[in-house]
Image 1 (cartoon, one colour):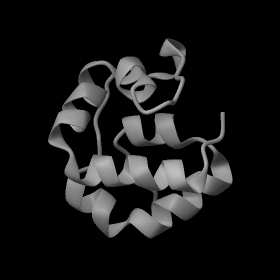
Image 2 (cartoon, rainbow, N blue to C red):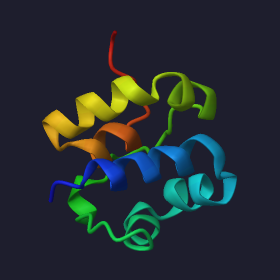
Image 3 (cartoon, one colour):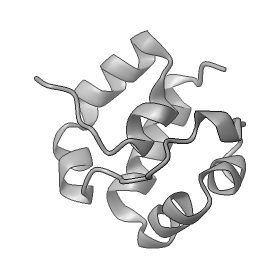
Length: 86
């Protein structure tokens, strides 16, 4: 389900600054995302969850928002830890 720009922005802010949320997301992505109103199927979780660093997310925030808004694939993209090439 596509999230609004406001929701995407809020999640990126949490990923860029909230160590507790980041730890929850790595340990139990389905539950962590449910806590912010996002339903994720366990099949969509990568085998290994690895998040981009807080600094990477903060510095690439606007580019990420644009990319994620247009593709609607935010969750698997972020959980893979792979940042898009500029």
